Image (tube, rainbow, N blue to C red; front, top):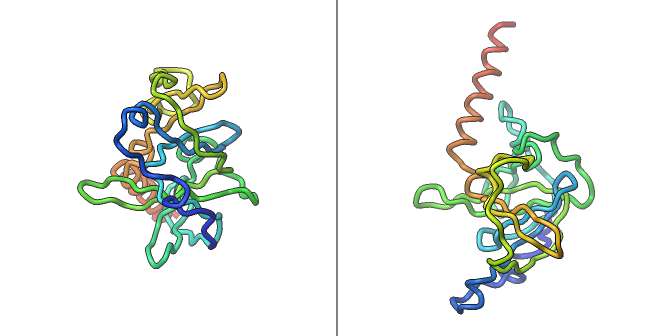
Length: 185
């Protein structure tokens, strides 16, 4: 697995100046034909899709795990997480490695996307609140709607999307249903 880009090299940490507080940088990416964005502050790196090890009895949205420099990192199919069909594997697929807060510790999680677009600065004045209806994903997954060149980009609340507690409970439900179906046979 070759690293495409290291977060530290291309995604500079934000200093505390007034101008930077009003504008935040977001990584934009494609998923099922729609453009989404994640704050770069959570992103560690972006790698090419490959060498996934499937884990039995996991929900559909957990594609498997990867070995990232000796660490086991779960990979989530974001499309499946949003209740859409699983992402088709193509040559532009990437895995975005994100740090998610888990209590007082952080956990690295890979998010599989169709393609990574660019890092953009979106002024706070160009971010609208999340809609309470009409989006193709759960409202708590949306941090806001950013306006870029007259179009809206869905800014994800990655902490909710990758909630470890919720995903663990979904995995437990999936494992229980598999166990029940095998006992019935």
